[in-house]
Image (cartoon, rainbow, N blue to C red; front, side, top):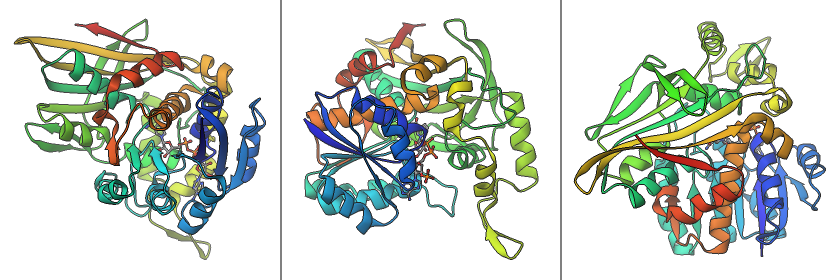
Length: 392
Ligand code: NDP
């Protein structure tokens, strides 16, 4: 029986609150805290079990630490924004509480994400006997666990890893992002990067694409090469990997809008002076775009996220594909959110469950692939993200 503190009442926070509430035998008390308390209260009102709510500015370590001291959770699930990661980790260290997030740290004034900042907390978490579990969403998150599962059960050596993220859903809006628009656009407009023969190879943003034929009737879709954070930890923890790439589907319509917004400077992250005050164009754009939370009732179709893996088993070459398909409308019926929030929020809950039940134990900072994948894979099937594996 554990208390859990969820920070961030956006699309993902809503799913995490619902999913934790569905497991009362593990999460005996739940608090949802965020910058805007009304959003927490709105989510709490959807759930039959009592959910405590609070206002917190997670950028302020003393404020965050005070809230942790008051509620005394075993674990903090950080589903605010990547900008808050380090402050929340500091607050967890100060108060002696385990930490979990779904996206690695990004400095607000620089569109660059990597694990260096958070891996630097390794000794501090180890000395305190606490766990920081990084990237417990779908990608990163489940894609790391899929890789660990393949390595444990199906391969002696993994040589090539392709992580392929398809959103075959449609929200009917001219342009919208499925999770926080600022974070999403910063990620997609970066230079692409993949791992090959022991080094990173860079590509121009969205300049490499191919068509992939997705299973279960989703069919062929164009996928684009991006850099994604799990590649960094996976090539470190599975050094036999020679090539690792991440791919995502985008519609032509999405890319057309993105190109125009970039060309006119609306995706800039540096402040510009407008009518005597500074504004950051991408933050202004976020204010204009549909709130990802509002897409829940509008989105139809499915997502398909999985790993295509090649390597050797017993001296023979092997090719393997493991994936989850998730239906936007089914997610909405269950928790009032679309599948992007759902596929992130369910693994965040399962990661916290791994920590508080002791299924995953350790002191320090960890990526998902460092633990036994089996109990996590079993929970995915139980909590709404069933997976399928095939040998090709
Ligand atoms: P939203 O923008 O919908 O929600 C973010 C929430 O965090 C908002 O409620 C916001 O408050 C709150 N917040 C922001 N700053 C602070 C702060 N300083 N203190 C307290 N609360 C704060 O984002 P999403 O729910 O879509 O995404 C949440 C996280 O999940 C992001 O980090 C995103 O990168 C990650 N993600 C991970 C994925 C994965 O597969 N691993 C996939 C998708 C998302 P307010 O409402 O007041 O602005």
